Amino acid sequence: MGAVVGTLTMQTKQRRISRDKADDDLELTMVCHRPEGLDQMEALTNFNKRELQVLYRGFKNECPSGIVNEETFKQIYSQFFPHGGKACVSVCVCRFHSLSPADASTYAHYLFNAFDTAHNGTIKFEDFVSALSILLRGTITEKLQWTFNLYDINRDGYINKEEMTDIVRAIYDMMGKYTYPALKTDAPKQHVDAFFQKMDKNRDGVVTLDEFIFSCQEDENIMRSLQLFENVI
Image 1 (cartoon, rainbow, N blue to C red):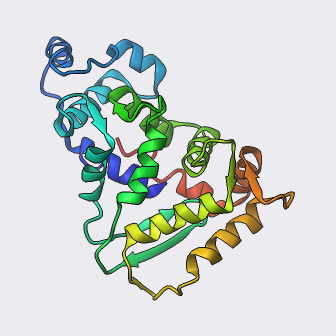
Image 2 (cartoon, one colour):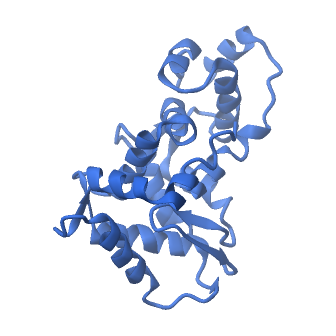
């Protein structure tokens, strides 16, 4: 989750408010997709109007049309992982330092699907800010539910070993082919096995949302990782 929030807020934090509300309302009408009004978004998120204005300017700077498709999302996301980098798997609590070229496209695909709540192949500003509101300002349960949905690739309400393996491999691809210390070839399988040993309480081969939340709340490292970005904006 650290990788998710860090990359999505890096640029928006640097934006500064320099126009009044009238100017902002004018800007909202000059894109192909017009986001909901600030009052409505303020009511639906944990951000105030000024923070929403900062986020909107950052979003519009990268996506002038107001809509992001998957390919554009991958291009933006890959800018933050051109040579690997520090990545955090919030559930497995694994941290490595990558030294080689990385491929963030697969992980970005899964991340895009998590943001695309309407499942229509696009992300609007409302989708972006709603997810960011949960990741930065949501309750522990809301953050864990969002993360669970990220890992539940087929959206059937369960995380199975195949889905978790796909996610872990995507994260290793994003980190780079080589890491220090060096990873064994069976490292993804080991992490998936450890995940299910910890999370699959009834040993039925899948992890439910309740099992996921309960297990995460038992882990102090995971709880700390969920609080890392609460004051980013």
